[in-house]
Image 1 (cartoon, helix red, strand yellow):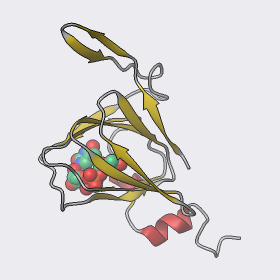
Image 2 (image 1 turned 45 degrees about the vertical axis):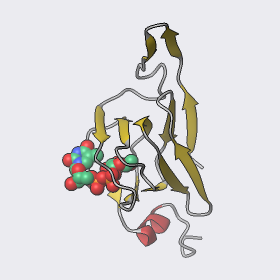
Image 3 (image 1 turned 90 degrees about the vertical axis):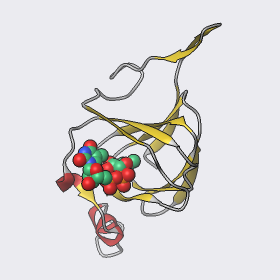
Image 4 (image 1 turned 60 degrees about the horizontal axis):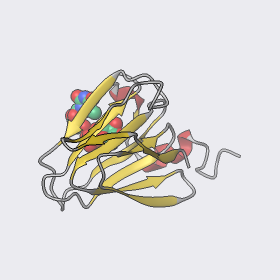
Length: 137
Ligand code: T46
């Protein structure tokens, strides 16, 4: 499975906490793009796609959501609910986002600029692309 959780170093004192992330140091790639999601709703899921090249780290700045990660053989679930932990997802992973808490805010740091052509939004095409559709042997 091409994903993992990354614990970020926290600089904390009596004023509160601060996390600093540097591309290539705290993240395994240089950051080319940042985007965020807000006004999410518990009954509205997102994602349902994979990327051929993109690497990303996703952080729940506020609230929580459940990620489903699928490599074409296994499906695993990860709860994202801490601002000091990031979910790294590499290429070739199908992802779905479910069960957003009201007002959940996700920040995403990405290794590439946005390119819709690099998305695989159909699950059968995803299996085919990674050679796990049973016809690629
Ligand atoms: C991912 C998960 C975790 C842009 O114009 N630029 C961008 O950088 C992005 C990310 C999206 N968009 C547009 C494309 C769509 O019209 O924003 C709209 C919503 O994007 P999408 O339906 O792809 O959003 P999610 O939440 O399903 O997926 C997003 C990322 O697209 C994806 O890379 O891994 O978050």
